[in-house]
Image (cartoon, rainbow, N blue to C red):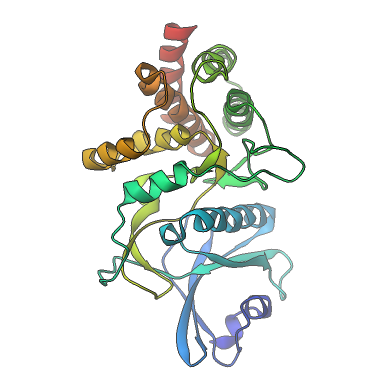
Length: 322
């Protein structure tokens, strides 16, 4: 069993190969997943390992490693910490990311007792750090992250409207066209949204109080749960599989509303801690605009009915603001 743990993983974690064992655990659409167990200072220590082959896996795992540790640095009990990310020693085309093991479904007492709304509010109200080479916090992220299988352009921008129009809407539209073929009607609609609606709703001189904070980036209900992190403490509200960016806090809400699963009590508490940006009467339309990116991303990955979802949002917003 121990021979199946690649030496690069053992070295990165400082584990004794004689004590380490690995077994398949759970499942993922984009990678193979395992539970790695070993003895550290006489006590059992468990890790969660994802592995995959090729440049896509390398890119995805690098982004996930950075994303988890960015969230963890702001709200440590909201997600697992990532301990290592790299390439296999025995296969230069195989890559890994190793995180704390998350015991989902645990009911162990002794957790912080903080609600999911409280934790997400802390994440969404903590100003991003100033990136190297700049003199103020920026919109973007130091590395490429993947939302599902889609790489995201996180190059730094000082304007949120600029970032959202170019790094999100126009970029994912191009990826969708590459995947599904030319679509002049959808392309025309999204270009109008990016060039007219985005500056109208998200322009620097219009919306108030927008500053870069950590966004999970793929926060549908399937990436949220309750679990015990790293075998320590009690059960906590947790998130996983992030694709982070430093962005407008309301951007997070697009996918949360798209798939549902977050109840009225959550929203009430969350908005008591993170009030809707002014002008509040445009909040629904801003969230729809943020959902548009995820509709386009799902169209890029899966095709089919997500095109109509994207077109419906774009047409509604274009008619109202265009």
